[in-house]
Image 1 (tube, rainbow, N blue to C red):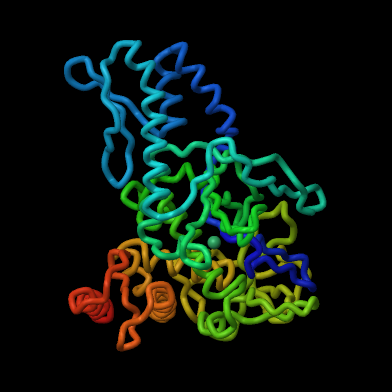
Image 2: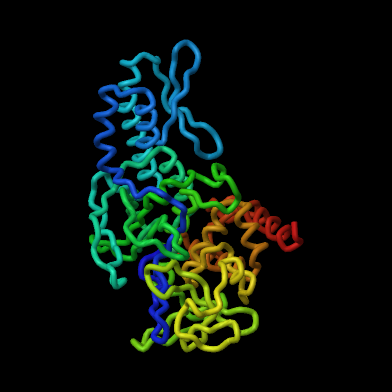
Length: 437
Ligand SMILES: [Zn+2]
């Protein structure tokens, strides 16, 4: 999600409101106070507590599991990238096992250092203040909630973060191209649920308290599997995807500012709404027959849903007649609106043109499979996204004598020099897509 994105519009006629959070939706259950409980975990491990507690602690703090291997040795490993990653092997006696957390802390720190160095980003230190949570009061007015801090990343979360950053080059850089964005792994949720009652998994903030943009990965985001190779079904959320999506917002912020440009919003099939404040936004996605849909709800206490709407902001019932509430309006699932849309979004998350593009950019960059899927779902959206990405590469890395970007993005999402080989690889991939392969 991105904070203050176009979707965050309160319409004048109805009480419908949309959550402006971009976010990445999830099914997370816990809102744990992880930073604080992590502190007490050290104490627990030092005792040492009974074996099951120790295992739970390792899993919670580091994302690591243990197994007995040959010769009385214990192996510490985590699942990410579709395989087990062994990080430590010790003798299985109590003294050796009690030393493991110190070693795991060092391993986590090395991983953080390596990510910061490779991508020039900053990962907030555990315990560092991030933001004050926003919650809704009884009248649905946003008010300040708990203070939210950074926590230490588990190894699977750091693995996913690294993969997301690798696929996102060079979008992690702030204006000027030298300094990368700061990333916080939050210890609790910082915003109300959104988009059909889902937990926010990630947030891009255009401007944080220190004046610069930042990215939050929430506890609901950190609970997701590390990468698409670790998920149960294709299209399930994962840490790498969430990271790529939030970093895409940083790129949009540099290329566009806070709003999707009118020509892009129109090309994506969104209808404008002139707010009485004078602000023009594009909150309504167009169907194939001039029908319009909006994602909102009657109250912050009701999950948002897609419903039919008139361009003046009145919800419409099944007969196309104006009604006063979302409850009375004709409602649709994400998938139904995708099927009806003039330009089909690439994933279920398209609360605004800004979000629709962030998901398309993520699909384009994440893997050859997701790039192919983007084309299959929506060839027009693929073209708009490819053009967007080429412009970013040309702006960042410069152009050659023939006015082409010096760098290109191959189907695996990596940015490589433009050579006859890399160009051929992309051409063949796209030719196969157009042939339906
Ligand atoms: Zn977003």
